[in-house]
Image 1: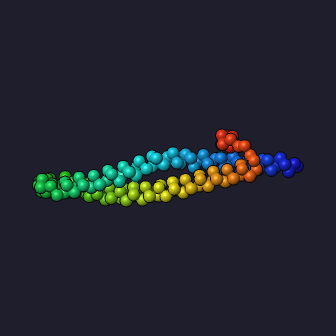
Image 2 (image 1 turned 180 degrees about the horizontal axis):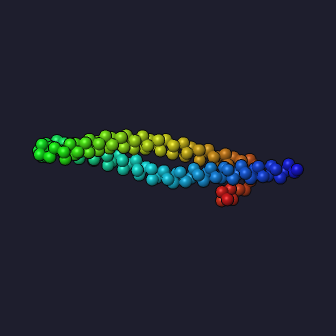
Image 3 (image 1 turned 30 degrees about the horizontal axis):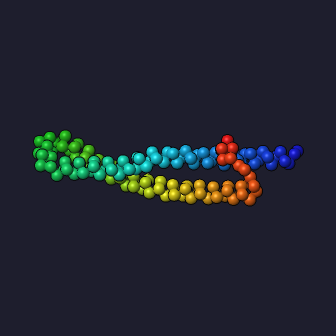
Length: 137
């Protein structure tokens, strides 16, 4: 059994795993934009929905409809109340998601800076002339 071949295989496997993890994190970073869009749209659209429901509840004609159409009025009250509840939940979730994504992105940027610094240190110390495209292959 050749120890050098085993070490080479192990090092190649480690490099493949690290490359795989880095590419996975890059994909998550790209998807991050989508999640930010969803969070921002929930932060913007849910207050609009809540304000429309509150406008309907406070409108003069709303009570006339409730008196004239009892079953429809009850269904309408249930529907509008559920819109307020669901919109409130989505609003809070959007804010929490936005904060979490921002926090994760800051940690990821710090990781990238530290990784680049370590790669630069190793390159300078051992006089490697490594092309980053070769590492990612």
